[in-house]
Amino acid sequence: MSSTQPPRVSVVVIAYNDAGLVGEAVTSALAQGPVVAEVIAVDDASADGTAEVLDGLAAVHPRLKVVHRTENSGGCGTPRNDGIAAATSPYVLFLDSDDVLPPGAAEALVRAAEEHGAPVAVGACVRRELPQHQDTPWVPGLYRHGEVVDRPADRPELVRDTLCVNKLYERSFLEKHGIRFPDGRFTYEDFVFTARVLAAAPRIAVVEDLVYVWHVRRGAAQVSISLDRKDVSNWRSRIEAHRTAARILAEASPELGLACQVKFLEYDLRMYLRELGSDPGYRADWWALTRDYLAGFDEAAVEAAGAHARWIVRVLRAADTPPADVERLTRFAAEPPRLPPPYATGPGGRPVWSDALPVELDGLEELPAAALPATVEAGAGAGAAGLRIRVHDLYGRLAEAGPRTVRLRFVPRSGGEPLLDRPVDLHPAADGGWTCDVPFPLTAVAAAGRRQGRRGMQAWGVEIDVAFADGTVLATAPRPLDALLRRRALLSSRYGVLLAQPYRTAGGSLALRLAPGAAGALSFVRNRLHRARAGRAAG
Image (cartoon, rainbow, N blue to C red; front, side, top):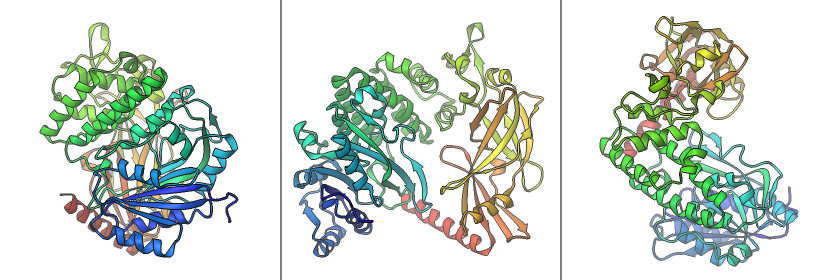
């Protein structure tokens, strides 16, 4: 379909040592159609042939202009600033060399910006895990499709979208307010850029279209700056970027400044805590750095944060060094949150974190049953295809609600319709909590994947619904016990053989790889080899 917009956009693509991928990014920008007047590719002094790839494309595509930096800047901010300086169109759109713009993205954003007189337009973005092609929406539910935000301070939760790449900017707006990225090796430069944009109080138009595909390649030989977390310097960089952004926003609007701090507690802190790892040195450095930063937080931000984030902050503040149950804290920081036993009580029977750290878990009694950080475990049940489910009580709150049944839900990790199993009755366990045995319908799940077009290896997340007496449902993810994590080869009249590998995700949840038939088994082997190579490269 041809564009209805005249040339209005400069797409700025930044690249460093990305010769194998930058062509796809540039091509996706050129494919936006005539609405894109120019694509400005800034090569940050690459040493791998990126410059030659870009020059070759520019020789074929007149709309592509290449800017060659003679010295590497060390970050993403400086080349983006170079791109803004070279742009000549009314609007600017940013693209990284390993990502792509979906068809129609630029036109949808320009149309919304001009229809509503908005200097900024924003659309949907997905994080696409490669090679699995698993899409995760970025900040789902934050934007209301078709809305126009007259003042960011009226919607302070917008600070949660720190990306610069899913938005279109009017170039004159950036020039008027002197908005640029931090220069040099400044990791998380988009935090500061986005804060400067919001602080300038633009009208923002929202489109429902997918406008950006953010590729995540965790197994790549050269991971992105934000995924390079081999030492605590990445967390230090994130804290410094957040500190700068929070200051910018607070100076412009107390509401935005407070929301920025709350976002850190509810999102950044929990994300890094659940990825804390087992290295004692890293843990100690991370703990000290985090406590130091949290010491300067406005207490109003801690009170405004959700109960789960509040409890984490108070445990951190109460312990000078990582406590003995720090792994329990990392599980609690997972998504969904899970608080494993033991469940200690303090004076008056009030729930506390532990006997060693009697931090009160305030607000637990007000949380609805559906929001409780319940722990559900999945172990090996009877037979090759059975699970033993155990639901732990939580300071009596689950007993209060009356758990009745559990139901498994299998969610394809590459996207698609989930498969729901039938509800199974729970029974009180002699040592507390509730248990039941449920089928592990591996063949039925594999068949559902085939019907959805997955012919090779399938990857499924396993979720669980706990239904209570009043009909309330708590949706969570079961944590697999070690005995469950063994490969199974099941004879199948449909496939001949079905290979199944339950595994634990990075967040500690149960997931499942299925390889039905010969084609599935072959893709299973290929996947194992790919992960092995990625592991060796990372090591």
